[in-house]
Length: 359
Image (tube, rainbow, N blue to C red; front, side):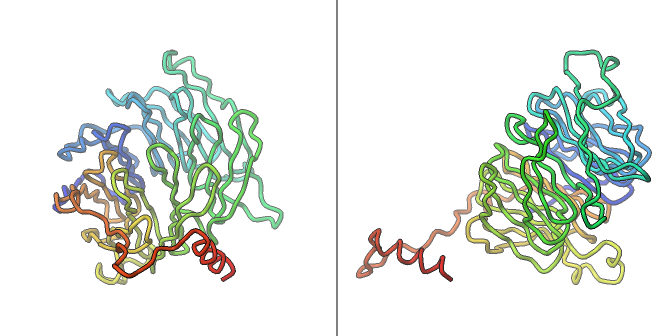
């Protein structure tokens, strides 16, 4: 598997994302300039110039017409994807950590950090596609304050996603919790704690029926979106910065490495900066892809399942195209019954499940 090395950013990569069709790759980094690349050959098509701070997140709409970026300069910007023109600047009170388009691409939501007297907050902006950008309101349609907890500690949001049909805003936090908010009233619908430490990133499969969380507690966890049921846990020996679900195979890709500040004291071999492949069902690691010489901060897999991109602290994006041997590979299935072995009848199977539950 030979990667294409995308050298366009001067500082560490924070986000990589394919569009819905998989023909474009969008990247953001700490050098203030988001870029867009052609995913088939790694050609850089252009940049979106104007931010004055780190790009923490970006999202592209369903038909790749508009891009929204979230930056540490306390603004979210709306861009024309084709021309790179900035259509509108949305000013926030603090650094903007995340941005996400709603279904229909007529509104987007952002999360921003607390700053001085202002609490962290979630904002929803209306940006109808057929309206003139100059008519868009500077103030959000909905603001949800995220005040300090009962113990006086601030809880900062780390990611935001719209669930199917815009039924809820799905927000992850740095205390390991996930909350669901009503996007119309702003009411909190649900809260649960998948992790004990910060959730670095969350990613969904294409039809948003599964999501996987990546955490500083060395694990990634797979959940069912509908009933928020925990399905699988993928354990590693280092913080997980990002994890993605393959669309075409039952595989999970994990990226991470030790803290960025301690990278200079270790060699690439010790720092463990590879992408790790896990089997989705069996939770077993079956392969790694090396190459980066810094912790992997962001991963994205093409919706067609033929390539994936990883962005790291070293400032490079590596675009890997899977070999035919991987694409044709059949996943192992449990061994078939041998002659003489009897199959479970339903009663025995239930007894075994009950025994496992009691353990």
